[in-house]
Figure 1: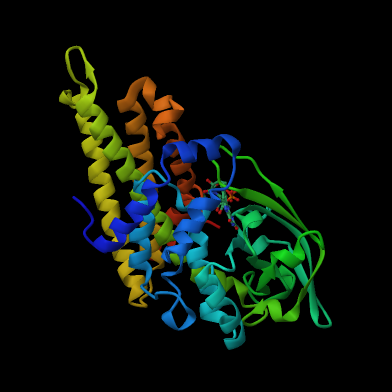
Figure 2: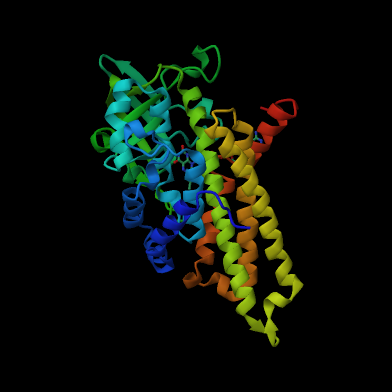
Length: 384
Ligand SMILES: Cc1cc2nc3c(=O)[nH]c(=O)nc-3n(C[C@H](O)[C@H](O)[C@H](O)COP(=O)(O)OP(=O)(O)OC[C@H]3O[C@@H](n4cnc5c(N)ncnc54)[C@H](O)[C@@H]3O)c2cc1C
């Protein structure tokens, strides 16, 4: 079953992606380098600004259109992880920024002149327990002075701006542990070398992720977004969009693996017949398709709720979990279907296999989604 929504967008994304074939990604993967040409092409075509309202220079199409774009990117064998955050990180400014911040930044983000695709939340000691972050921004006159450390901050070297979550009040001083955190828009061009150091972290996939060290970094008070101390709520607000979009990338990955496995199973002949004639090969491909189709429906539901301005936290979480599990099952199936060739770099399957594994851990791990459903939907007692 083909996804019929936004056929024209899907077709033009597919055409764009055809200029970035497997060989392009394989070379980047070997060198762990950033797909600048691909990101520029997506940006120039306006695909990264669909969530920005027209009054600020975007196309204001909404999240369902954005899921169509990222799904097709991933189905084509490309990877949106290098730039998907350019689509949604600006949501923090759009929802909570001042009129001046919106006018100053959103049009330049929409045109691609400014890259806002770094999002600094995770810290090495706090892990998923975000209220335990320790990076601290202390008010001094017209500035905040930031000290601390972040880990797994992707695309920081390829961003002009970063949305940063830092404490502005110690955890034990607020009424709730989530009080006292604030969000800042950090200008990376001014920060690097003046208190901010970026160190790349090499991982099993080419994801341009980094570690950040803040050593008395001065940022102007005008970098604060919204109200001081209310940052945790602002960050949570942006997470639904991120989860829905990443779920759509997983659907694209699953479709990539199913397309490739089906084609290979029809062509590859062993024991005098196509391997796809054996049900031992057919059934896992069919199962991957069933799982992907069900997950895609949940992504569609979450996106529709989001676009209607309805609460969608549970649906966004469930979509991300189902889609990341469907893509992982499809990845494993695709390797198995290809036998030894599943491991060959030139087939792109081993690369996509490594890439799609990430999404059961980031941006939120499966256990934390299950915990959300258990406690918020089913009324089970909280375990932490
Ligand atoms: C490649 C990559 C890119 C990333 N990019 C970014 C980024 O750009 N910005 C950013 O801020 N972060 C980023 N992250 C961080 C990512 O969001 C976290 O890695 C993820 O949320 C999991 O947190 P953690 O690694 O601290 O795991 P931990 O919190 O240490 O958890 C480890 C494991 O224990 C489980 N666990 C923890 N507590 C419980 C519990 N109470 N019950 C059951 N199980 C539990 C978790 O589910 C997980 O499986 C990135 C991570 C990676 C790997």
